[in-house]
Length: 213
Length: 302
Image 1 (cartoon, each protein chain N blue to C red):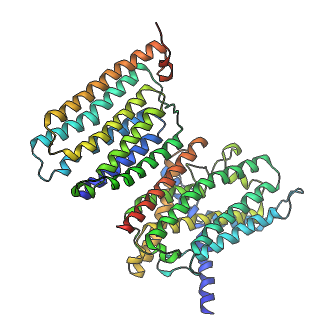
Image 2 (cartoon, chains in turn blue, purple):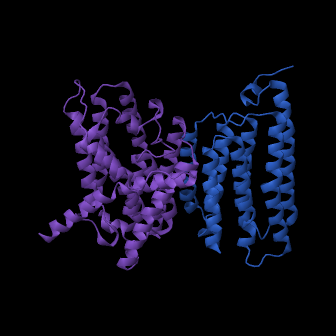
Image 3 (tube, each protein chain N blue to C red):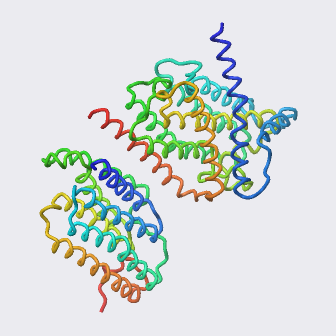
């Protein structure tokens, strides 16, 4: 069971690096979607005997992160007529190296934390730290609003991984609330992206620093 | 005496088999494209034809123009004597031979670039610059992969490093080494061996001014290098030491063949990357090898 969980988290860590290295927006969105599906399946693997609540949460996570949010982002991209090239502040090779450094630091740093013995063998905490760091790099290092949303989603995936440590004590309401927040957030961002595009004729967030009437 | 004889026999085997690999790759490419394609033994015919021809020498070129390809070929031949062949082991094997292998590759590259610069052609200088700058990144990945194998087995001897099962990092190592193989041998995502546009070539542009026997030596050396990397990749990934000798030999030959087919498929299905994307791909290969190294390290500690 731990082997399968570690394999999925390893996959998610690989997808982090893929998201940092890809130069096209759709491929980043796809990467985030696959990562969401991989992480959504995790509760089913972690729980020895999943009850209906865990199954519902897992299915909802897979549906929302794997299909609803990518569809919303794709719609926003089409609506705002964004070209697919990413514009990096931090180049692809440096961000890839940063992400790899973050992953290694996550693995090394998790050893120093006082974890429960049942969590010490898994990659849950290193994966969470690595995803959060990758999310930060994407948030800071990309120009376009949509790629920053992808960074935010990867950041959220990391936080979700951290939350899996507490899977037995988090009520259903909290889980579904987070999912709903995420969906609404991405939905609103989709509208905002459209507005930014109309107001500034570009999604370059650097232009948002200048105030307009 | 018998040891010398077997060593010579094995060298002859390396020399004879090397031109087969590009033939197989071309065959796969022809098959994917639905063409009949050149015969598998085409490179042998080419080499024989080139060997009979005379060489055109520039009046500007120093003897290095001829010496470069020759030294590169001998260096690759030396690497072939070090490379173990599945269960048979290497013809020459000693502690630290893996370092010599890396340096022999570097010598071969230096000599090819040197011979390319001899005629003073701008295109060849460009190709040499590209070859060397990509090699800087590819070499880092190769050395990291070798470090991973070395940490895994606690040895710096090629035969001992490549025999045991490679452990959890095998997939990462396979990906990283395959990318290095493609870059070092100027295969498709990095360079197109069939292109005839000087601006986009790397390896081919370096040998533009060579003709006759020197060109034959260069082509044969390139084939030898491809076979060397294919052998290194398959032995690094497959647990050949755990199998009985005949099965290991068959698995080794099958893996080398699979690498050739894989290269052919990649060449048929992918286009060459833009130059600015190449460092990204090579960095990815380096990171794959780096993670394999960390896995080997951590696995050894636990």
